[in-house]
Image 1 (spheres, rainbow, N blue to C red):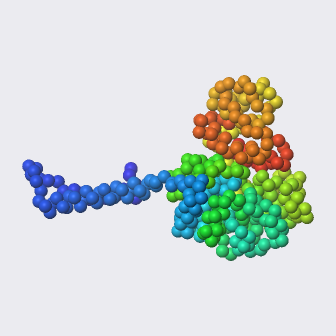
Image 2: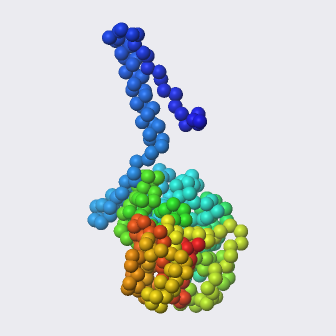
Image 3: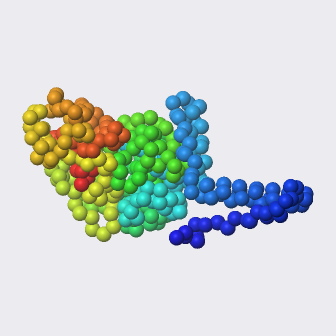
Length: 390
């Protein structure tokens, strides 16, 4: 049965009486108007159901960089949403002070309203305006790690919309290191809410092509700033507690934070992040997140035979299996496809999302990732893989 709300009433074109070969000028003009009206309605209906593919702007020369910044700022000042590069992952950005613009991010991503988004700033003055209280520890950590992949959770300033904070009393603030993102924020003059530029719970994008495949028909503009150089999301540190709490591990790990602020009370040996009481204070806290389309397993093996035994235990056919290794590299696991990421946490973080995207693109039925070491530099990678496999 047709839904009346989705149907249009088209004008009826007059039929010529039988046997008449010509029409009067008046009837011809009326028929032309009717046909033009039908075409106008049809175009409107198509535009209502289909959006043009996103404009993708390169930035590899100074003039292209400047043009991309100008175009992005134009869209953002008008209340629109654009995809922008950061050093961690690509972000889906909107004016963080415009509740309607932030809500558009949630609609595009299909993001749960209870999942807060991080506010991206350029400069300490802008950061302080986003927080109701700015403690000395925030200055210490900002001096050590900003611009960079560290998000500080602080009491929220009055001007930050509830959509940004998931209705909670705190806000996550980060000064990204990517020059394009910095230039856009400075030219806008306002902070940007910018979660990852992908459909909610799917793989985060680390290049413009990933964004285009996920959201290219839902947003007007993607700025191509190249491959992300960190590759996974920022460390999130909650400064509203004493001692501070790491809510989401990142490539700035607890030992590095302690080196910069040895008296902050942070315990580097804590492996488990505390449960949230009340509204979520950080993104990346949902059990399932960062997930490829294919099933993902995290396994440890010493040699080819050990890997074969594990695959048989999980009842996996080698056809359609993609294996991502970093130290125990399989040599004879045909017809499974094997890829190798260097046994270095920074290189692994930079490459893992792109490799998972590639597995999906190649039609993998199951992705087997060699388990990372249980050491602080690998903790953020382990967190992302565990959530991807949930």
